[in-house]
Image (cartoon, rainbow, N blue to C red; front, side, top):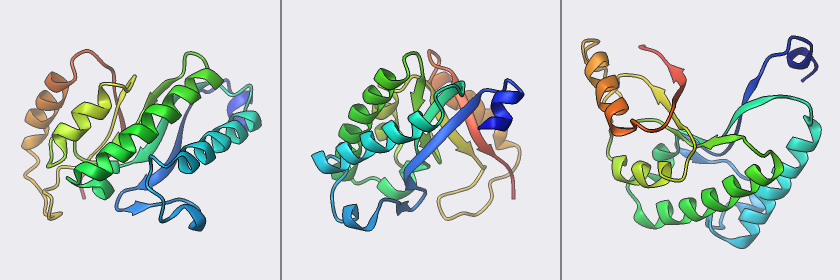
Length: 170
């Protein structure tokens, strides 16, 4: 944090209870659904701690979860549980850091979980994503799809800023 403060650099903070295909929580929470009050309370305590360690660091945004669609898939129950968790923890983050922009990172805004991502992004301040032109089976799309992919994503989310947190072509 000292480096960023000394250079007057703002930071985007990411905390990942989901990272791509995995639920990444302490072992005692592994079997709890995301909407369990204990899960929500523990994440709030984590936010308390993290924010207390960086009180003067200017944050551009907070990302809660990395490529969440990889883990949640098209499972309506899991999406509902995570939506409740995200709603509660994002609201709490905004109490701790008024004005912070909160989002959750998608791996594929236009993929199989598109409708669930639209729903969760309605309560997000910013749209966060990874962009790699890949099919669901991880085969490469032709590079010519990039323009049309970005047109589709920006037309879907015209009213919110889009933060590309990861981008590449393997």
